[in-house]
Image 1 (cartoon, rainbow over the protein chains, first blue to last red):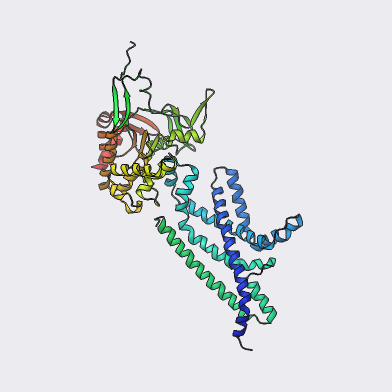
Image 2 (cartoon, chains in turn purple, blue; image 1 turned 90 degrees about the vertical axis):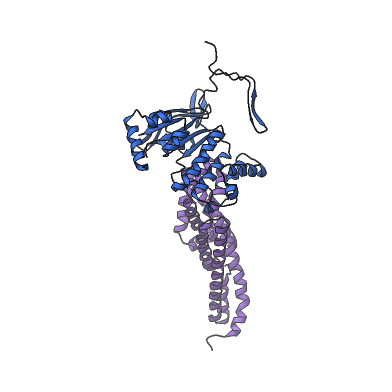
Length: 222
Length: 291
């Protein structure tokens, strides 16, 4: 038996292809949730109402301080005991999104706090509404600098998608493992999965970098 | 003695084609017209245990140009920031154009005003900051268009025309598509002045607008302010360290010390022949620094 057998590579490809689609879908959908919900968390934390902002701060802290796997288990296995049945796919992507939203909200917050106080004051002096201030003045300055930070979580989340295997979602690594189990041969499939994760991560980083560059140029920030 | 103190007869005022006043005889008993546009009434401001302003009383007449001078920490910038609602006041009332700024009168009592009231009254005031605070992601023109479009609801075309006109007035028609980062400090400050004027305020506040500028750029900003004072009906309230400018430009100079107005009067008198010992000390220190 050779160390590397190309015939297994061709045989494993369809498995990995199916798994890769699931992995990429889960990452993109999950991250979309994380981006939007993270911004919502960050904005609510800036609320002038102290109780509201403290409540959200605590929620974010709670999510960040417990394992992702535990949260997935909780929603998928504990939920049904109270009559809350959520399909694996929805539960998986939802929890992934919410978990990373907590991290992203911290990044957004750093960006928002980095906008100079004078910008807020100019908005008050010009009588801009609160909504317009956020949308037209603060966020266009807060977000471009934090794109690399958000991008880190994008890649990080992608690499954590194998956790979804725990609730029977056939993402790429699980497909590779299944292939190995069926053929008593793990080398090619596992290495190919690893190779794909590497390539996707590098491509994602490059995309994040060019988005960051483009945004900074678009908004004439340094 | 029923003879009014001020009488207008056949007064007309036109700006180009626009007739602002065309009234042969405005009934004026000296009350309405003499009402100050801004009045601080026993205004107190505290930061924790520190009292920055203590029961300040200050009235500013329509179209009056007032310069505020004083050592740092004397509360002079706080006066402007309270008027712009950037700082809450802890006591007293600020009146703007006959209305309380942060309160409304309800059943004879003063209660905190709604956001709507605040925004309406605040619309009469414009402010220029020491550090410009231009929006860095917008061109000079966009900086001057943002608020007229989104707050006043002006059509984009009109806002652009007005912004271009104002930028021309401050001598920057050639820079309207430049971003703040591409402008010098003096140019930035002139854009900031145009941006504030685009909202057509009745009162303009200038908070140490030349303090962050290189010495050779101060002149261009001051000459814009000078022009503004000469050509427009604007009440101007200015915190400054430029004594020469205060002397030639203002109708009145107020000297702040320790949260109080210690001395005020016409610039010639206050700057030329100050009565208070503290004023004298301050002025001689400033003169020494500038010589």
